[in-house]
Each structure stands twice: as C-alpha cells, then as structure tokens.
Image (cartoon, rainbow, N blue to C red; front, side, top):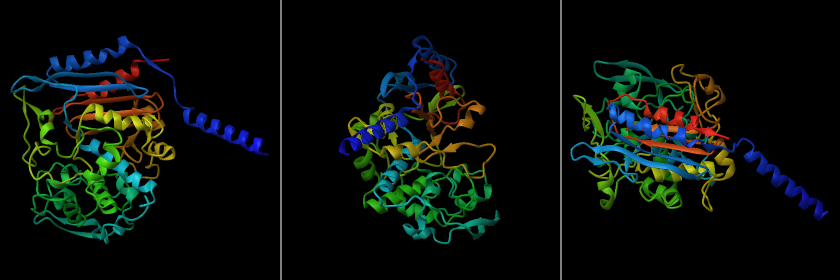
Length: 426
C-alpha cells in the first residue's frame, strides 16, 4: 500500500511539473538580428528622436544584453550608464500590487473585500451625477457597488487619475480643492510634507467615473492600496516594500526617495526645445521629487525610482515560478494567477481594450489579432517618464528599456520589443 501511495505521489509531482512547463518553449536569440536593437537606438539618437536610453534583455533569467546609449545631461555632456537611476513612475504599480498579493497570501486581506472595511472614508462614495463648471461643485448618485481591493488592483474601481482623466467634469472636480497635495501628491510625484494616508482620505471624497466593477478606468487605485499596506502592516509603504521585496530580491537601488550617496545617479528628465534637448521642468510638481523636499509621500502607484537591473530582478520571479534564487517570493499558484486576465466581464473601452492581471497589463490570445507580440500571459507596462518593460514566461524573456523624457512622441519602446521577438529562434 505504501509503495502504491509513493508511486502515486511521484506521478502527481511529475504531472504538476509537466503542467507548469507545458507552454514553455525552448528558444535562443539570433545574435545578428538582436544587434538590430543597438542600430535602432543609435538611429533614434542620430535623428534626435531620443537623447539616449538604457536597456536590458534577459533569457531564462540570464542577462544577455545590458547597455547604455546617448547623452543623459545636455548641460555637461554626461553619458548614460547602465546603473543610472530613473523615475519609473507607473512601473511602481506592479511592485505595490505584489505587496498586496503577499498580504493576501497570508490571509490578512481578501481581494473581494470592500476597501471601506479598512479605509472608512470610502463609505458612501458616489458616482458623478451633475457638475457645475462655474464653481466646480458637483452632485453624485449612490454607487450600486462597493469598491473592492480587486477593483483597485485592476483599475475597475471607478476612480480616476485627475490630470489624465478623459472626463473634464471629473478632472475639474478632482482639482477643485486648492490644497497643494491634491494636484501633486495624488499624481505620485510629490516633494510636499503630506502622507499618502492624508491624500487618500481627501481623495475619497471625489466622485467616481462609474460604478465599481463595470468598466476599466486607469486610476490612482494602487495609491489607495499602498495606504492599505500601511494600515495592515503597521509600517510605511517604503519600509514594507524594502523588507518584503527589495531586500529579498537584492534590489539595492530602488527607493521612493534616494539616499544622499545615490542622488547623483538620478538622471534628469529631458524634453526638446527648438530641436535641442533641455532639462524639463513641470509647473504641477517638482521633477526632482526623488531627491528634494519632505520625502514623506510614498506613492504606491508612481513614486519609485530604480535601475534596469533592479527591475530585472523583480521581473525574474515571474519567470521562475515565483522564486528569486532559492527564495520563494510568492507561491506558484499566485504566480500563475498574476498572468490571468481579470477583466473578462468588464465593459470595454473600444479605444483601450486590454487585458489586466493582478499586477499589470497582460497579453491575451485575442491581442495577437491586433498586432501583439510574444506569448499569451506576458506581463507588461510602462511609466510616465518613458520607461517600459515586459516579462514573457512562455518564451522565457524579459525586456526593459528606460528613457527619461517628457512631451515628445517616439516609438523606440515598441520597436525594441518587436526586434526582440523577431530575433528568437528554436
């Protein structure tokens, strides 16, 4: 009997291994084709489309290309370096979302619990009904559903993002209060003396675009979840992420606010003026927030700065069954769940029909009909200052490209990904 049970266990184990690996494809890179990436970046620099970039490509969690291109500071001619630190903005969302999933794995929260259970300011939140543009007053109607943690993590809560909302009424209502941290702190790029808790409690009074769970609206919901992490853990978001993610993953250059000894590695944000690259300034917030100001606002949706190598370490766990080296960061089932679309029953915006898992956007089967590349379940996203990543479990590859620009239009990030997939061979 014992022998039969042992054989059964072995069979089940082998079956599980086969299930986990069944969609994985053994591939290699065609070096000549992959070298076209360097030509892509150098050509974009010579045409003045970008000032430069730092990129990283990995296969089976081994770095195959990590290189810096171009000039990062037009004032002194300093060139980009592979260990430069960039503002990664919305690439912060995946890291904070992973923090939420770690709390969920421990049974400390439920993904379908209402957020008002933990942040009572969200009780009675309403959907925008009428808006008066003359004085920015508004009325709301009672929401048919409560905002859940899953809604927040998948951008289906009905919350917006203020400065990029398509609905001008919501945008105006969002900014009607003149407190500085409404336009600054909620953006995530803050040097103000305000905490994320203070900002979220204030923001909870703003109207929703729509009933929770009915539509996808890109939002500051991950900032709300950053505050939830603080509530549940009893730590600041910075302390929690450092302990739970950055230290285990050996991410030594990822911070909300850079230590003094690392501040010189922060690259400037650039834009073009009269066809010349100049350092960018924004009237809405201090671009140098990672190294200046109160250093108090921990934005879970946009506040981190990091290097390409640190972010590679983060992405590597999703290609390694939730592990980093010999450390299990998340469970295998959670790692699989992350790559499953959460928006199947959501009303789609025809101009923004995308899949979203539990930490970021994902590639779905139907996306290939619209020109998507890579394997189904690939996770991807980008950041406000022109950074981007993807992590593809099917082909075992990671691509990260960092630039740091504003108010320009160019396509090197998309072409970077296209060339990588065009370089694959059996």
